[in-house]
Length: 256
Ligand SMILES: NC(=O)c1ccc[n+]([C@@H]2O[C@H](COP(=O)([O-])OP(=O)(O)OC[C@H]3O[C@@H](n4cnc5c(N)ncnc54)[C@H](O)[C@@H]3O)[C@@H](O)[C@H]2O)c1
Image 1 (cartoon, rainbow, N blue to C red):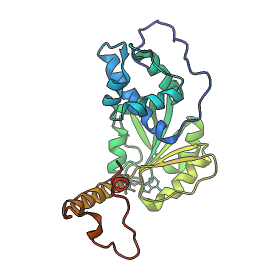
Image 2 (cartoon, rainbow, N blue to C red):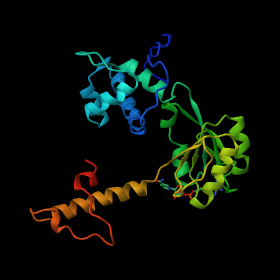
Image 3 (cartoon, rainbow, N blue to C red):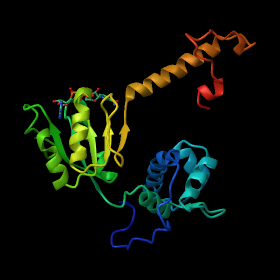
Image 4 (cartoon, rainbow, N blue to C red):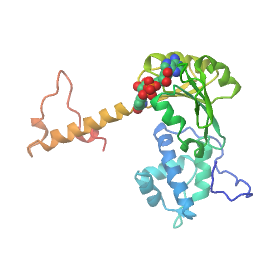
């Protein structure tokens, strides 16, 4: 999927011998490295130091070097990493060398925004089908795709070889939608609905909930305010937490 390989140039051999079993936190950082590397390539850079790449990706350089060592990529002393090669390696490990078809279910406020977003295509994902249960929405055209009735979901998922299902329905409908996706052979689901889904073994679910992110930031705000209010003597005077909640190590609590 790399747009930086000159047209006609054969794909360079990828230096990853077999798919490594990576720590989940490393997997979560690889897309950040990839984004930074694409920016570098677009600006004509052929090599990058671990320090520069780490800063661009927002991590520390020791962590970056450890992450990339899992891919068998160590860079060259005094030169750094080969940008194009590293893009190839990360795209290979993330499975981005093939374009994956996505079905989006629920085209309300959020679904509309997702369906209209062009950024997925440039990162290797094609929204192949849209579904909704509302007869008013069914038949509507968004970005060249006609919204189909959710009753067609399992059949179309098989026909279109849908790899990933995105759920943007109300929570009450999400489990039923997940069941339909699974019946259609979909084994990866991105769930925006605020609920927990039950799926068979072998089906991966990732949940996106901006309210949870805000609640976590709220905790940090609350925590910082409580620490600022402390006299220099420190933790002994912390306001007792409700119930039996023990005060945690402040460094651990603020994730530093
Ligand atoms: N994760 C987040 O950060 C985040 C942010 C915003 C909204 N949400 C959640 O995303 C979901 C959608 O939010 P919204 O504001 O777009 O809601 P919305 O009401 O505007 O849209 C929901 C859509 O789902 C459709 N729908 C309902 N039942 C269905 C079913 N069984 N099959 C297919 N389609 C069905 C509705 O017809 C509607 O078009 C909600 O669960 C909401 O809580 C999550």
